Image (cartoon, rainbow, N blue to C red; front, side):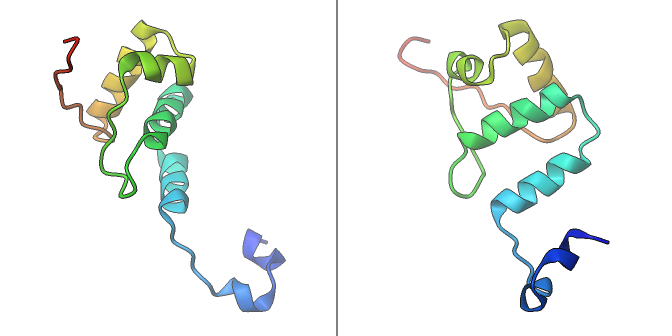
Length: 95
């Protein structure tokens, strides 16, 4: 029995493909440490509507995620190695 069995008949054939659904389906498939999944979710919360980019500062990510700086960089490296994110350095007024 799957989840669709609990839906009304008229909704069983509907396929709802929102960005959110696609993201969560993808995350379930990731064979990666749960902390890396969490970081990916945090980064996605800052993404633009197309889900193509986000530019939160490291300090903002640390505050929102609850991760330490060293752990953040380890997890970011895991996500980059797996091809889930790409880091593009940028300069700000403070460097």
